[in-house]
Image (cartoon, rainbow, N blue to C red; front, top):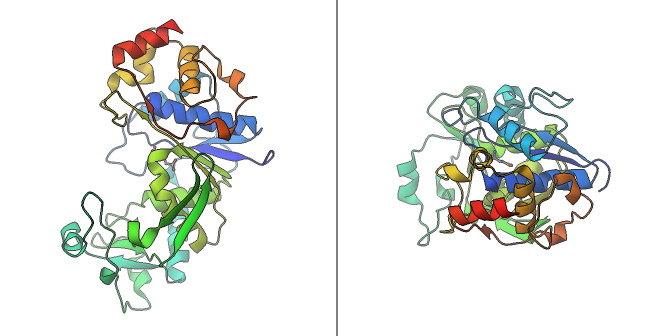
Length: 326
Ligand code: GLU
């Protein structure tokens, strides 16, 4: 799709931007710009216990330093705002009303340990929510009583016995039999906080997002999200899950990796062109690691070039000297 591409970048302001976030953001930006599309910034701040003040501004400053821009977002505004999830509760409530009206939801007052007592999983995997625990014979007016959180019940979405499939722009055909991998999932937590799965789908529909480009750690959620799209009567967007950046011990980058934050690299004298060049090479967009400004890479962007595998970083000192040498 050349015209009408609407992509989004949806960070949670819970940690500083590191090389892994930057790599996904670069790909999301290149995908949008090479399609002459729009890019939206959406702040996913629903998990208030983990949100830290100032991180959204810091993330924006980091990406601007790399040369990225966006067309709609917090502060910038746009026709599809607000762009901060904590300001979008009414939209989520309307979606819950619609899902409850079509019989897709039910209240669940079970604790984690009550669920774990019944659930069983093959060694090493997480057990799906057991169907036998699905609330039955609920009164027809249950939603009137549960519309507001009562602090005792989560709201779950009923997953049917079906296989969901989608064509990922990086990984090709992906399938998920959600009732075996996850089972009925929570769309509103018992404390009243909307679950990520619901909020992300409601927002991507409301913001007319056509392409979801995000980290590969979220690929496992996509099946659930497609079920929500269908239940809300909407067509799912295209999905692209960008393989992760791992540290030299092959662990996912996280807040622990302070030295791999963009701000820390900047303080070490690394320049944006070095980071762009290194990350573009790491995901297969260039033949060799050389300095680049991001605009250089637009013309040759193509999903078929994006590597399917995670990128494993060398140890920190080799990484930094390698970046400085570019
Ligand atoms: N907010 C999520 C994160 O920061 C991204 C969710 C998404 O892109 O769907 O990891």
